[in-house]
Image 1 (cartoon, helix red, strand yellow):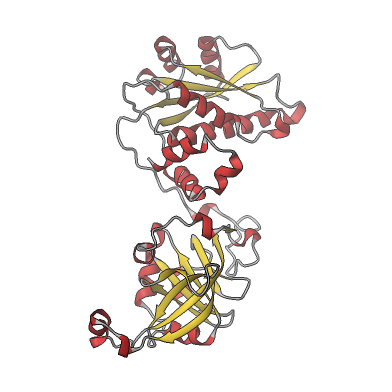
Image 2: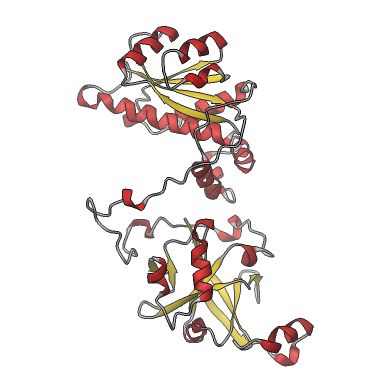
Length: 382
């Protein structure tokens, strides 16, 4: 539903405005990660406006020298869909689908010479855009290949009465899914090399372009989390120190807001004296707060149950450290990083305790927490 709302909203704004919308990047990445091939559909037609949106998405794809060597054949006629199913043994789902979009390469618009085959890349990019748009619109779709199988190309061209200059690359079968389709996690680090084939991932990735895929964002405008649940439910790490020595710990307490000025945006964190991180918070001026996604629950669990005094937690978890402009450590595996400057630090005063803190510290061997108010200097997200 969130992806559908996002796409509907984006249709009313310019691309630049859309990219600045709160949560835009996260929704787009979620749409990519959750898309899956759908091969069975409800007996329900696809609305014309959704077809137009998918075609617009296809034509927004990158294209070599802007030749746009594509042509899209939209098929909704039942007899045509049935006839198309007979041209491809892997496209039998066409017999139950309400819609197909055939992505063709237009050889009259293709580049000349050895560059001619770039039409395949251009039309493939358009195909992926259509698949992602279908998913964002609440539809299901599957890519069925045609080119370069000569028999499939010939038979499908005959059904669609394509002129000689059009070569069908694939048929995208589309409809409303008749059941939930769970995406596959295809991530495999074995399929990645660094710098040269077989090259291992650098231990220190701080010198890599874009610092591990992070971009700065305007947290004052784009932060959309509930401040009452941000620390409780998101899985956050606090890190402090420098390149020679630092530590990180899982945190479940914190506060967001302003203090002493409406322009001073702050994150407040709390650290007990027995924690190893406390030593760094007392010594250094800057710290980071990091958020991890659901796929790295192991980070939060391990960081919250092991001390940096006893074990190299980064090494055990396979984390890669980088440093902010002011030298505060953070991990490239995080999805959000907030760099803060400590502008106030002090221990809670027991004389001011009410019932809740009194009960908390009756049997708490880690000691009474210190609070650290950090002015947010920068924020970046993956």
